[in-house]
Length: 189
Image (cartoon, rainbow, N blue to C red; front, side, top):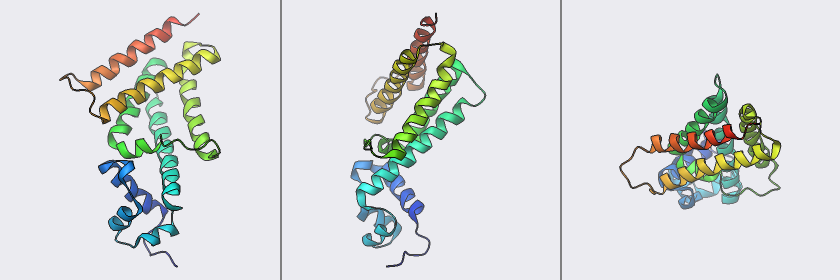
């Protein structure tokens, strides 16, 4: 069966991203994507390998976009300023695309070389920015885990409406991140 003109993998992914951002990744189905694109569900198989393939493709796209957001945020700044900018970029990405953000945590299998590579590229990007702290290799990796925990934990609480107090969330995020980064400064020899 030939693919319908105007429909390609990127169009399908964009429709899936829009739906995921509107309702959540867990709720999207191939039928909903087909309905949005005004095509029959079987036509999607010309572009994606069912829901597992779509989720994999969304995870890849999400990780690639996250890497771009983080890299762009670090341009022209270094050290603490770069890490703060990267944290804010992470938060901005998750706020703009909550469903796509969720896709990056669907646990790509370890044999998914592309997802593993993208994840490693993100880690190496953060490690390069953290070089100013002069941490050992293990300390730097512990710090990356800490940053990821702060970023993801904050985003998860925000997405799930876990912050009920009338307190500026951006200020809270900056405060938490500054506190963590000031602890890294103390680790310097």
